[in-house]
Image (cartoon, rainbow, N blue to C red; front, top):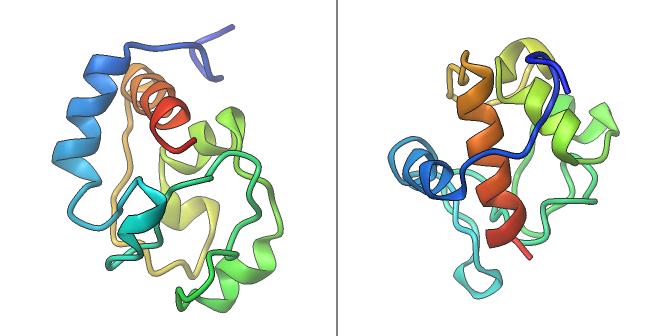
Amino acid sequence: MGKDSFADGDTKKGANLFKTRCAQCHNLKAAEGNKIGPNLHGLFGRHTGSVEGFSYTDANKSKDLVWKEDTLFDYLENPKKYIPGTKMAFGGLKKPKDRNDLITFLREETK
């Protein structure tokens, strides 16, 4: 795969990225519930704006896409550009390698 699409990354580096860039707003385990952002348990194969008990923007609810490696790869580069109107206050991960590492980690940890 090219640098502009998902390719398997480094799970350990992805874990560190999650810890430093995502964990303040997101949980990974089913029993942990939502934080400022929705719980990410079961993320892969889930539709945007569909976590029970989380208050999404209309932009997220109406985007109607399924989260998978490639959609996350594009979204995590610049969330506000990918879903205009989202309340996710994260500037994104500009480096494809960082996105690959994070997505590889999330794929394992959100099952």
